[in-house]
Length: 106
Image 1: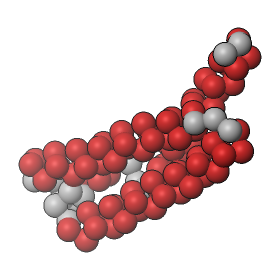
Image 2: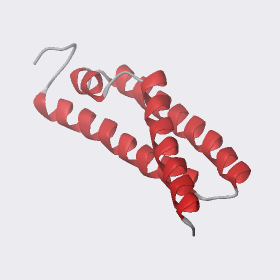
Image 3: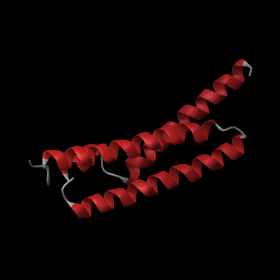
Image 4: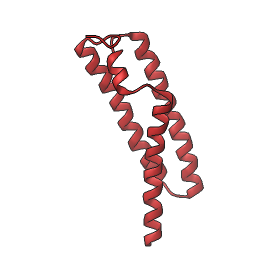
């Protein structure tokens, strides 16, 4: 790959990972909020519903981007960021449950 190809690959990777983070922030509250409402089962259910929406939106847009670009970098960047965000939200809930947080109080 020439220098322009490498630059294009890097930009596709960075943009797709950033796109995933943007989508998660658009459809979800922060992991900090998930931590604070971890012991509210309805809030957990809603959180997971919107996390799945973020994964689907990110996946669809970046697969389309990969097809258009004829490169797999958008799929890789979006996948890494989405897996991380899924883990981060689940970790926030687990820690909040363990700490007994509810409605921003312990």
